[in-house]
Image (cartoon, rainbow, N blue to C red):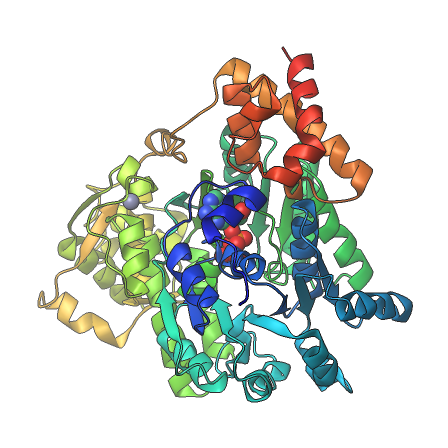
Length: 601
Ligand code: ADP
Ligand code: ZN
C-alpha cells in the first residue's frame, strides 16, 4: 500500500498557505487519485500548485515538462526555497552535473524533475525514466502542442509517447490559453480523452484595467508611473525596437529605473537584462513583445501599452504578466488615432490570405471596441473570451470614472459628410477645421469655407471631434491613411449611417482632471508606519537574495512581507501563521525576519 500525504497538510506545511484557490483542490484530489487532467487557468491563477502538491502527496518522482529553461530555473529555485528536492535537466546542464543528477534520481532522492521536451528524443532517456519509476507527469504550457497556436513546439508532439510507455501514470496538462480550438487540440494530441477538463474563470480581478487617450504618451506614462507606481516593477510594451530604446533612455533620464529589451540585442545581453529585471525590486522593463514568455515574476505591478497590441488575445496575454501574486496590479494602455491607422495598415500590408486578414481585422476591431467602450471594461473583455460577468467590476477606469455615452448618429453624419465633401484626401486636422468653421489659410485656399458643411460642427470642441473621428475609425466607418498620407476616407459601410438606418453610440472621453481619480483599487493599503516596516523587510529580503544569488520573490512574496508588516509577529510561532511562511522558510528566515522587525521598530 502506497502512502499518500494529505493535500491540505502539504499546502500548509510546505507552502505555508491555508486554503486552496478556486478549482485547485478538486484538481489536486483528482490527480492524487490517479486521474488525468487538463487545467485551463489564467496566468497567475495558481497552476503550479496543481501539480506540485500532488507531487508531494505521492511517493515518488514527478516529471514536469516545460518549454523554457528560464521557467524551469525559476520553479526549481522556488521549490528548493521551500525545502523540496527538485532539479532541472536540459541541454544547458554540464555533463558532470548531469551524471550526478542521474545518480540522485537512481537513488530516488528527487521529488520533481523539470525537463525540456527535447529530452524525449535523447538516447535512452525513456529507459532511464522507467528506472526512476515516475508517479506523475505534468505537462506545463500544454498549448505548445497546438500547431494552430502561437507557441508551437514540434517536440511537444512527441509527448504522446509518455502515455504509451507509462499507461498507468497519471498526467496533468496545464495552460493559460483559453480558446476552445487549442483545448481540443491538446486533448487530442496528448491523448487526454479519458481525463477531466478543469476550466477556471479567466478573470483576473486584481488587475485594474484602464485605457487613456493619447496626447503626449511619454508624459502620460511618466505621470502614471510617478503617481501610481513609484518604485514598483513594471513592463512597458512598445512596437518598435527604436521606440523601446528611446523610451527606456528617456525614462531613465527622468529618474525612473528602466532598461530595454528587444530581439535586436544579442542573446547574452538579453538574458543579462532579463535577470536584472527578476533580481531587482522596482525596475521598469521597456520591451517589444519579444519579452514575456517565461517571465514568472510575481510582483510585476503594472503592464503598460504605449502602442496598441495586435489583437485582443495578445493584449490579454501581455497584461496577464501583471499581479501574479494576487496583489493589486494595473493594466494601462495609451491609445490614439495613429494606433488605429497603423494597426489596420499592418494587417493590410501583412502576410496571409484574405480570410486571415478578415479575421485579423475582426480581432483588432474587438480590441478597439474595448478601448472605446462606455461599459465596464472587464465585462467587455470577458465576454470576448466567452464568459459573462453579471455585475460591473468596480476595478476598471470606466467603473471608477463613468463615461457618458449617447446617440451620436448625427455627429457621425456630420463628420462623414465633411470627409466626403472635402474629397477624402485630408487628415483629421483639416477635417476638424472645416467642421468647427476654422478659416485657416488652407481652408481659404481650397475654398472649403464655401462648403455646406463648413462650421456644421461648431457646437463641439476640436478635441471632441478628434475623439469622434477616432471612434469612427475604430468602428471601421472611416479608413485612415490608405495611401500613407494620413488622409481619411469613407469605408463601404457608411451608407446606412448616412441614411440614418444605423444608429451609432459614441462616448464622451472623461476630462484629464477626472481621469486622474482612476487608480488601481487597493483593499488593504498599508498605513504610514506599516509602509516603513514593509520597506525595511524588503531591504532585508534584497540582501538575503543577493547573498544567495536568487530573485527576491523566491524568498518571500510582497504579499507575505506586507502581512508581516501589518501584524508584526513577535515570535516564530506567530510568524508561522502568516500566509506564505511554510516550515522550511520559517526555519531558514524566521530569525532574520524577526531581527529586521526589531530593527525597524
Ligand atoms: P500560474 O502558473 O497559473 O501563472 P502560479 O502557479 O505562478 O500561477 O501562481 C500564482 C501565484 O499565486 C503564486 O505567487 C503562488 O504562490 C500563488 N498561489 C497559488 N495558489 C495559492 C493558494 N492556494 N494560496 C495562496 N497563494 C497561492
Ligand atoms: Zn469595470
